Image (tube, rainbow, N blue to C red):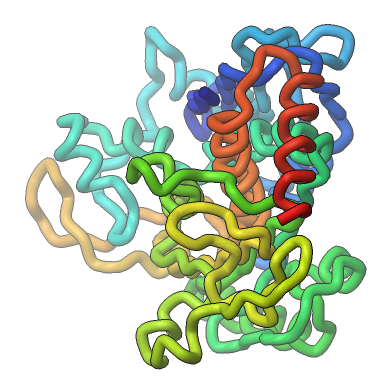
Length: 377
């Protein structure tokens, strides 16, 4: 069973990812992980923090000579900005001056204070910050090496920022050359103009992105328990990304508008069994069906606005505008990279639930044996 956690604060020493249950002998490619971390930092509309950070992987345990050892793995992404926050983030003696007492609408500030009874909302902000996703991307990058070994590919692209939508096909070259990770030059230019306008107005923008997983044979996941369903694992990982408000599989909510005859993907003879459509998004009954797994995520605008929304001072109850904290104008491109990591983690959990063996060679042998069985049906 694959266990995954993160730790760390936005302006603390670093962000950390803990992984347990990864088989021994998996070859870890540091360049793959660093490339994912670099992509997470990019995207038109990102804020000043990304000009400070230069995210790189540091492995603290569980890997030796480029191979996993079979024990717990601890990854670190160090915060360069910590140098500017040492006094305010010290574990023992805190310097005054960075307290936060006005909750920002849309953030975890007020709800988090109610949950943990913090008087200084800084204690909520630091952990609830999307900086935490650097740890997820590091973990996802390591597990991408596992999926690569098994012949499973994953990619994402941005389909909407604000009211600018792109409904065309994925093209990796165009996506990688786009400042917003959208594989269309005209849509990219329109999205950039929209971000520029929002920046000028002191506002923020949300949007949508898609994530696709290819190469997964049928039979991964389980319908026998709710928490083993593949779509449960995927949706939970994706919904836990800060700012994500909706996750859809396949045609998603469109299925509610159509009759069953137009929704369900018919099965045709062949080895493996063929489908002419993929409305289900590659999952039926909580189990992969051999088709590409297709997910769509909707992200709300970032809640930190330069022109703060109305709020209250939790010390006095007085009406006041929310305090501005350095932030992005639009983080949809970065969220698409985090979405890849989330799907990689969920897919790896499902695979290791089915083929969890101590050594990577044994996992690969079992996975390929299952793929051969599926292709023979």
